[in-house]
Image (cartoon, rainbow, N blue to C red; front, side):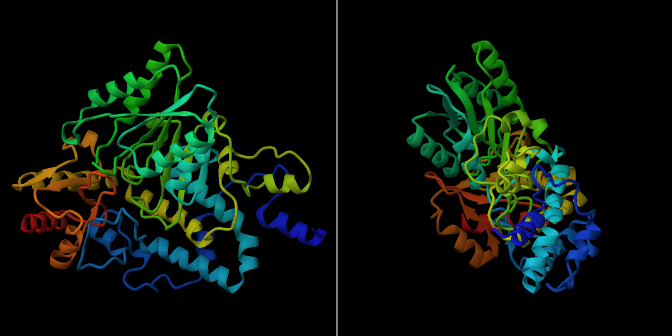
Length: 448
C-alpha cells in the first residue's frame, strides 16, 4: 500500500493505532449531511411531528391508510424522519462517494452508537452494530467460550435462528445443547411455572442459557428479570459459575420500557427493523463488559484502532468491546447511519408512552377476540407475560390462507407464525389505533 493511499485509508476511519472514535454527531451535524427535501416522500415532514398526538405519529409513516397494519413488526416501514435521513445519506454517497465516506463515516457511526446507548441507558462501548437479529445470534452462539463437558440450555419455544445457530455450534464443536419446555399451554403460562422449569433444567454443565424475550409463536413474554435472578440463585446452590443469560430481544426491543440492566441479561440481541421501526438491515448486540470478555469473535472488525494497528504491525489497544465485535466490511451505510434517527424518534415519543400505547391496544385486542365463539387467544391475557404480539387459533380455519382473505376482504394485514404449530398473528403498535383494533376484531369475527 502506498503512503498516500495508506494515509487516506487511516484518515477515512480515524484508524491511528489505538485510536477510538468518541462523541457523537449532533442533530445539526446530521442535518448538514442531509441535503434532500424533507417532504420528498409526500405528506407532513418530520419536523411536524407532535409526539403527544398519536395521529401525528401515524402521519409520519408512508404505509397505506386504507389497510389495517397489524403485521408491521415483520419488517417495519420507518417513519419519515428516518426515510429522509436514509435519502440524504444516499444522495451524499451517490454524489461523491469517496468524500462522503471519508469525511463523515466516523461521526455518523459514533452518532448511531451514542443514540443506541441513550435509548438503552447504557455505555456506548458495550454495543456492537449488526445487520439483523440472526446475525447477532450467530455471532454470540458461535463465539461463547465453552469448555469440554459444558452445554447451552435453550427452550422448546425459541425461534429457528436460535435453534439453528446452536445446532451449528454443536455439530462443529460437539458442545451439548438441551431444550426445556417452559410452559405446556401458552394461555395458562405462569411466572412461577416458567421460572421453576428453567431453574430445574440448569445443571453443573450449563454455561449459557439461550432464551427469547417474547416468543413469536405464542406471544408469551418471559419474566426475564426473575429468570436472571433465579439463574444466579441456582448457580450458587450448585456451586458453579453463573451461566450467561443470552436473550433474543427482538419482539420486546422497541416496545418494553426497560434497559439491559433492568433485565439482568448478559447479552441482548436484536434487530432494529421491527418494533423500533428502524432502517431495514440494522440491529445490535449489547453485552456487559465482563460478558464481551467471554466471547471469541469470528468476523473481522473495521473498528478504529484495529485496522490501523494491523497496518502498522501493532497490537490494537483502547478499542471498545462493542466496536471490536461489530462485523466489518462495507455496509448499506445510508441505512445504518439513519438508525440514529430511529432511536431519536422513539426517544421523542417516550419509551413509557410507546409501551403503554402498545399494551393497551394488545389488551383490547385479546379481550375482544376472546369473546368470539370458535376463537382461542393463545397469548396470555396478563400484560406481565405478554407484549405486542397477539396469537390466536380459529376453529376450522385454513390458517395459511387466512391472511390473504383478511387483506382482500377487510384490508387487515396479519401474518402466520413460522412454527410447526401455526397461529394467526397480529401486532398492534404505534401505527395502529383503538379504532383499528375494533376493525380487526370485526374482521376476524366475520371470517371465523
